Image 1 (cartoon, rainbow, N blue to C red):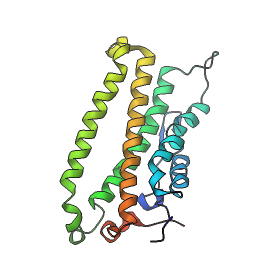
Image 2: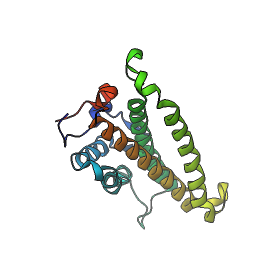
Image 3: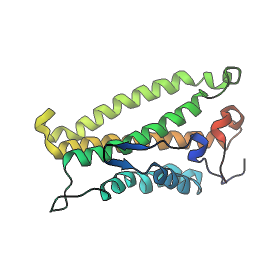
Length: 195
């Protein structure tokens, strides 16, 4: 592998369509953003991708909808757009986890990676619990359940989207680091690099 090459969304499968009813998130724009950021320095990849890419799917989704007179979107529209972008980051996270675990490799090539799979599984489980608690805490000032209101729902869904994206990008940084090191042969197809 040549230093400076970037792991592309194509190496992790092309993004599927993220749409529901009249709402859609441009998954290719999100993937292109991460790929563009990934062409830079590996050390700053995750931070730059978080700063530049999280939320562009929601923004694009909302731009294609009609806002009310005062520029505010209704609750289902706003939450729908956030939920679709979160599904994108979840898809990307799953692809990276498959790469880190060797799930896409033939069984006889997984021996090295099988040593790290229990820790990876434990980390993902701990992350899921952390996100549930963190996002619950962030919305605690808005009350609970149906009485929480629009703002509380938006804060919760935005938190879930941001945390999913951050975790996906942090895992992708780990995979990129492995792919640019002596561990590259163990990660097989997940280390296919773009132009």
